[in-house]
Image (cartoon, rainbow, N blue to C red):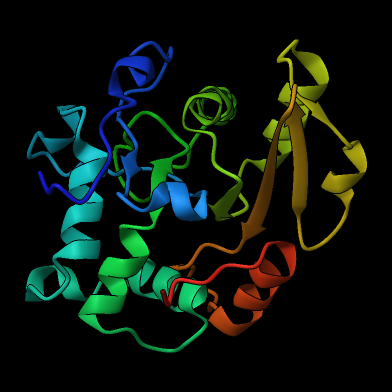
Length: 221
């Protein structure tokens, strides 16, 4: 694995119930406080999803090693970079700057058998609990949910379970979705955008504006 990541949280993260894959945490994550949250992995039969470092290998390959042809065309990664950089394309150096400046976690913590299979309510419920537990450990300032599926289950979790998190239920009724959470003195803002590889088109400019209005980000330094 690359040395461009932080692993000092691993012992604490290993105590999170339901966390099957350790999150990627870029070496400059403390400077931005940005946690990116994807949706799910899809089983391809080669066994790599049995490894705790699967998420980290995903980011390393498609984010840091995108100069290799087999990793260059990931629509999800390229559109995510365009959104965070607020520009249509990115150089290899810019891509590395993005992925070493963020943390990344998939919300659903079990692999889907195929791309035709959707996560269940239970998958999302567990995923949000895992995310909140991970957040208390690595303490991002903002979570950018790359996709809006399952967001209602976060509202359900907060409304029906004793989580220790405070929230404003009105946030779930506004569009775009920007949810403000509090856990003691810790504050976490969750910004929801459309899935960057969505089949109905993805307008990075619009979602870049949403993110910038919610929390100023600069990946150019």
